[in-house]
Amino acid sequence: MKKFFVVLSVVAFLVACGDDSSSSASDAENSSSARQPKSSSSSADKEKSSSSVTLSGASAESNGSSSSEKKTESSSSVKSSSSLVMPVPCRTETEDNCEYGELKDERDGKTYKTVKFGNQWWMAENLNYADSAKTPSLKGKSWCYGNETGNCAKYGRLYTWAAAIDSVALATDSENPQDCGYMKSSKNILPDVVHGICPDGWHLPDYRDLSNMLVHVGGYSIAGTVLKSQSGWNEGGNGTDTFGFNVLPAGIRLGNGSFDGLGDGTDFWSATESDLEQAFSLYASYENEYSGVMDYAKNYAFSVRCVKD
Image 1 (cartoon, helix red, strand yellow):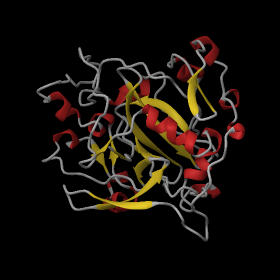
Image 2 (image 1 turned 90 degrees about the vertical axis):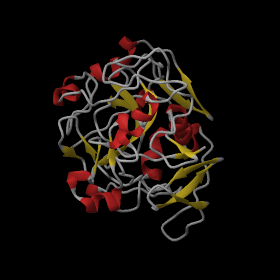
Image 3 (image 1 turned 90 degrees about the horizontal axis):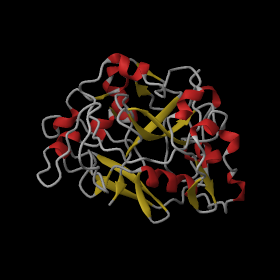
């Protein structure tokens, strides 16, 4: 079974866009901290991060641990969220009092339910935008799970990180062009807000957006339970969806082109890199009550949820 382990990492803004077009199938498999399907993370996974993050109170703080300390770090070493003031759930099996909205993507006419976390609006459904003519970054970099169109309708599309950040648009930006390419660097960092492939007025969440969401729902140790949908997860791994975010087990596409994890888990890309090969994502698994932020190879394809500007 696929196992997802928490490694919350402070981002180091290394300068690269990270287009994966020149990556090979072995890029993900040979990366020391790339996800290996149906196996647990190794201590090498945790050495990739410069420090860990502790969720405590209402903020995410660096604890400044060294990579050698991280070799023995487990989810139990991160402070429990039990000391947090628990938010009031807005959705149960019988009532739905969440604050919802609707987003219409003018590019293709699709509409998405949205939900408010604190003072921030999020998409409550996965993005399913596929027009590679209008958005060249998508060409050869987004898929329906198993290449079956019905899965796109239910779970949205899976995008590489380069597609999610709209690397072609960044490369052709006249004011701040980014030389996007796998293992290429740029003289400039990514913009503070990365619009990416999100509809107008929305953007790809960054590391802080994901961390703030975890704090808002009560901390990483229960986030999986309260964010996951009430049905659809394998082996009774359903959640309570107490905030109307409705995380579905959409699975992923690996760097070698195979698909994995439908019904087992999901990841959502952030706009934040960890290094030239990897970027951060929010993950959830049928096996765990917790959910966290971890870095994975950019040529993996994950789901996308956008945040309102």
